[in-house]
Length: 152
Image (tube, rainbow, N blue to C red; front, side):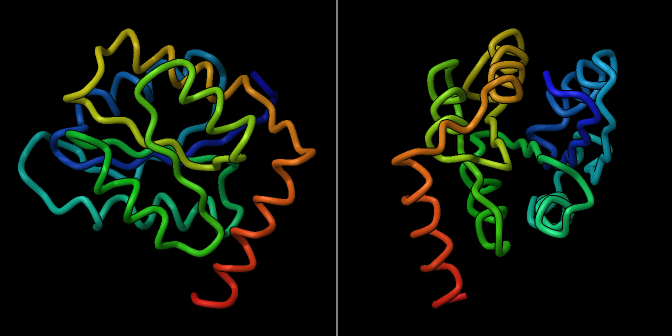
């Protein structure tokens, strides 16, 4: 993993357990973590926690973000509403690798109800250690930005 990385974390109640485990995992690796909540497994509204985490990435306060929920779908949707965010829902090592290498994702979404904790941690490590390939993918990322600038 790269040096001097900071990551914004956000979850709802259904992603709280994995958020806490991922936070511990990242801190053990020397990564600075900013936790935007939630802080328990009590039912809550995920946009309240996901948006601030995504905004931290978009504003350059952190390098990356990781958002978690039951499926990760709603969390990815909220994160992707923030200008400058490319959030990818990942459920395997391959999807994590492609999210970074092809899509230059700056936020990772994981569903606690869809993968094991062991796999979730592996996805995080793969996602963080994969570099963006650029090349033909750079043009596509630029097209995403053009769409975002035109309609957002």
